[in-house]
Image (cartoon, rainbow, N blue to C red; front, side, top):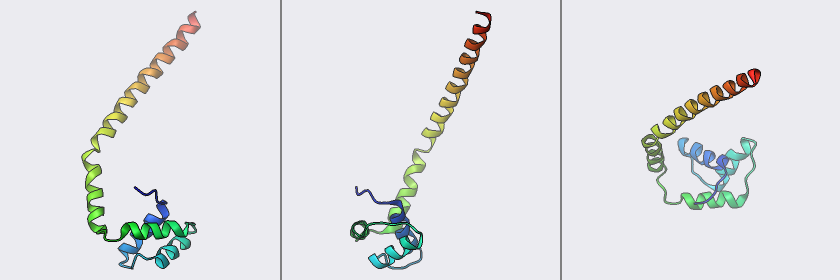
Length: 101
Protein backbone atom coordinates (compact mmCIF):
# COMPACT_ATOMS: atom_id res chain seq x y z
CA UNK A 1 0.00 0.00 0.00
CA UNK A 2 1.26 3.45 -0.93
CA UNK A 3 1.55 6.02 1.84
CA UNK A 4 -0.34 8.99 0.42
CA UNK A 5 -0.81 12.41 2.05
CA UNK A 6 -4.37 12.91 3.27
CA UNK A 7 -4.67 16.21 1.38
CA UNK A 8 -4.12 14.41 -1.90
CA UNK A 9 -6.66 11.69 -1.18
CA UNK A 10 -9.23 14.28 -0.08
CA UNK A 11 -8.56 16.29 -3.24
CA UNK A 12 -9.19 13.18 -5.36
CA UNK A 13 -12.44 12.47 -3.48
CA UNK A 14 -13.53 16.08 -3.90
CA UNK A 15 -12.86 15.93 -7.65
CA UNK A 16 -14.71 12.63 -7.89
CA UNK A 17 -17.71 14.03 -6.02
CA UNK A 18 -17.73 17.08 -8.30
CA UNK A 19 -17.56 14.71 -11.28
CA UNK A 20 -14.31 16.33 -12.44
CA UNK A 21 -11.44 14.33 -13.95
CA UNK A 22 -8.87 13.17 -11.43
CA UNK A 23 -5.75 14.23 -13.25
CA UNK A 24 -2.45 15.87 -12.34
CA UNK A 25 -3.60 19.41 -13.14
CA UNK A 26 -6.87 19.18 -11.18
CA UNK A 27 -5.29 17.45 -8.16
CA UNK A 28 -2.55 20.06 -7.89
CA UNK A 29 -5.08 22.89 -8.24
CA UNK A 30 -7.27 21.56 -5.43
CA UNK A 31 -4.35 20.85 -3.10
CA UNK A 32 -2.73 24.23 -3.72
CA UNK A 33 -6.09 25.99 -3.24
CA UNK A 34 -6.22 24.45 0.22
CA UNK A 35 -2.81 25.88 1.04
CA UNK A 36 -1.18 22.46 1.33
CA UNK A 37 1.87 21.29 -0.58
CA UNK A 38 2.47 17.88 -2.14
CA UNK A 39 5.20 16.55 -4.37
CA UNK A 40 4.65 15.98 -8.07
CA UNK A 41 5.73 12.36 -7.57
CA UNK A 42 2.93 11.78 -5.08
CA UNK A 43 0.39 13.31 -7.45
CA UNK A 44 1.51 11.01 -10.27
CA UNK A 45 1.57 8.01 -7.91
CA UNK A 46 -2.01 8.62 -6.81
CA UNK A 47 -3.20 9.01 -10.39
CA UNK A 48 -1.49 5.74 -11.29
CA UNK A 49 -2.92 4.00 -8.21
CA UNK A 50 -6.46 5.13 -9.07
CA UNK A 51 -6.26 3.98 -12.67
CA UNK A 52 -8.99 1.42 -13.24
CA UNK A 53 -10.41 1.82 -9.71
CA UNK A 54 -14.16 2.21 -9.31
CA UNK A 55 -14.10 4.88 -6.61
CA UNK A 56 -17.80 4.55 -5.75
CA UNK A 57 -17.36 0.82 -5.17
CA UNK A 58 -14.22 1.36 -3.10
CA UNK A 59 -16.02 3.93 -0.94
CA UNK A 60 -19.00 1.64 -0.35
CA UNK A 61 -16.68 -1.21 0.70
CA UNK A 62 -14.68 1.08 2.98
CA UNK A 63 -17.84 2.35 4.68
CA UNK A 64 -19.18 -1.17 5.25
CA UNK A 65 -15.99 -2.58 6.79
CA UNK A 66 -15.68 -0.45 9.96
CA UNK A 67 -19.33 -1.03 10.83
CA UNK A 68 -18.64 -4.70 11.55
CA UNK A 69 -15.90 -3.95 14.08
CA UNK A 70 -17.41 -0.85 15.63
CA UNK A 71 -18.52 -2.59 18.84
CA UNK A 72 -15.04 -3.68 19.91
CA UNK A 73 -13.57 -0.20 20.51
CA UNK A 74 -16.67 0.85 22.45
CA UNK A 75 -16.34 -2.18 24.73
CA UNK A 76 -12.64 -1.54 25.22
CA UNK A 77 -13.32 2.09 26.08
CA UNK A 78 -15.84 0.98 28.72
CA UNK A 79 -13.26 -1.41 30.22
CA UNK A 80 -10.65 1.36 30.34
CA UNK A 81 -13.14 3.64 32.08
CA UNK A 82 -13.78 1.01 34.77
CA UNK A 83 -10.02 0.48 35.23
CA UNK A 84 -9.51 4.25 35.58
CA UNK A 85 -12.20 4.47 38.26
CA UNK A 86 -10.65 1.57 40.18
CA UNK A 87 -7.16 3.06 39.87
CA UNK A 88 -8.35 6.46 41.13
CA UNK A 89 -10.09 4.80 44.08
CA UNK A 90 -6.89 2.93 44.97
CA UNK A 91 -4.83 6.12 44.72
CA UNK A 92 -7.31 7.98 46.91
CA UNK A 93 -7.23 5.16 49.48
CA UNK A 94 -3.43 5.19 49.46
CA UNK A 95 -3.45 8.94 50.01
CA UNK A 96 -5.82 8.61 52.97
CA UNK A 97 -3.72 5.82 54.46
CA UNK A 98 -0.71 8.14 54.33
CA UNK A 99 -2.58 10.64 56.54
CA UNK A 100 -3.08 8.10 59.30
CA UNK A 101 0.38 6.47 58.71
